[in-house]
Image (cartoon, rainbow, N blue to C red; front, side):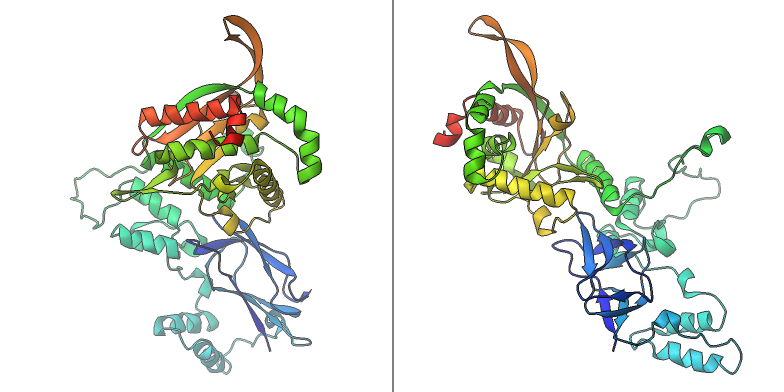
Length: 436
């Protein structure tokens, strides 16, 4: 008896995934719980394990295809059963066509007459099933309905012309109308966005075209959406890191020995942010229609760069944690991110984000909001600079801080105050211990 391989539940708000690659091919032996394929969602990459031991007998969805939750990916036959792909195909001819048609008609009780006809035509040699257009992806269908659009108004970029969410967003951005108007013969034709100019013959052979991963496509879409939907503004300040660096230098060995984790800077910054969020709750809020949702908890997203792109795992209830607990959780999430083992739960529910471009040498930047959050703090490189302290010019390890915020929720005074509170906590870290 064959065991079906289906798309697992992908987590809250995730309804579809793209097949990154299959690790096995038809006819390969597999063990129970052995990874069979990789699914790319807009948040994480997930490996799908084998539900049972046996032989991979069918691959129903190939690399690059978009599939919904619960969709059939393939099947595993037990023991000595022959893979479906290895079965001898019936010879084409009048005598065998009726039997093949009957098999196609009975393949799925849920098939419509149109689908059955398509299968019949394919088996009879009148055209392959693969050429039939696919319905819009679930997220795309929802967006189409919300904007009173039909799939015919959007050009699909998915496999077999499937309309994806990004296609709908692009159509909306270009001004697709809910009801397509009939243009008069003399009316000017709207010109779509200019396509990429062709490369010169001398350069074309030295270029490489690589399909964007699902994660990279989502990163691009979400960043653009954040810029388009929020009234984003950035304010800057600088912090003298000497007190934190002295404290870290003094206690790092004892800290690591006791807690089993290194004492870094992220624990101090995360704690400083949670203190500031309590005083300025607007920076820990989001807009829902005409309402503002204030979060009375602090789930801090920590941006982590990986080979596949930027991911933002979340330290949940960071406001209730000690610096040691925060460092342990950040260490766990960072390792999972680099190994590609973050779960969907690790990525959900963030209320504020911290991005540390300083680890790459960035001196200053304007981070983009992680929608629907209303604030993101950018950390940067620590650099010795001359500053005036007590009327004297001294050299201090300085860091620029940048707070990007949604001006629809956060006023300028609140943004500046938030950043000043973070600065004060870092320049006098005893405040973090005393909860001041």
